[in-house]
Image 1: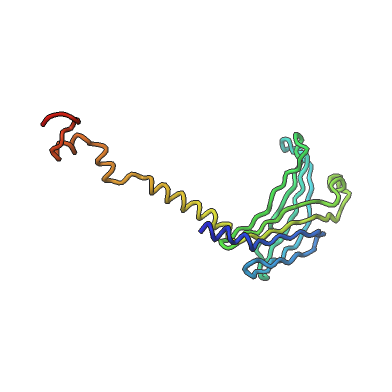
Image 2 (image 1 turned 180 degrees about the vertical axis):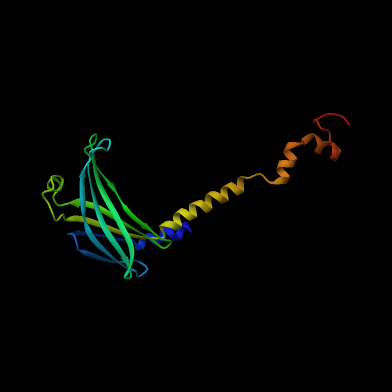
Length: 181
C-alpha cells in the first residue's frame, strides 16, 4: 500500500501562476479531474490583539472539481514580531485519491497591502495535486497495527511464563535444575 502511494508521486502536478482577484486557474489532476480555482481576493490585517503577530495576509480561493463547487480554501502568510522569516499556512483539500494544496508564494505589494493602499492585490499561487497521500498514512497505520499484533504475547506463551513451577510438576521434570526426584 505504501509502495503504491510513493509510486503515485511520479504523477504529482505542480503549477505556479500569478493571479489577480477574479482570475481562474485550471488544473488537470492525475485522475483526469479538472480543478477550477478562482482567486477571490486577499485580506491583510495587522496583528493587533494577537500575541507576537505583526501582520497576516489570507488569500481566499474557491474550488470546483469537474464543474461542481467543492468549497473555499485559504492560504496564509504571517510575519511575527520575533522572527524575520515569513510563515506560510497551506490550504489543503484531502480525498481518498488525491490531495490539493494551495500555497501563497508571494504578494505583489506587501507594504501597499499593509497600509491599505492597494485595492487589487495580485499574488503568486502555487497549486499542487498529489495522488494517494492518504494511502501513505493508511499504510503506516496498518504497519503499526501489524507490529502491535506481532509483538502481542499469545495466550499459551502467557500461561506458560506465568506458572513455571506448575508446568514442571505436571510433566514430571524437577522444578529446580539438578534436583533429584
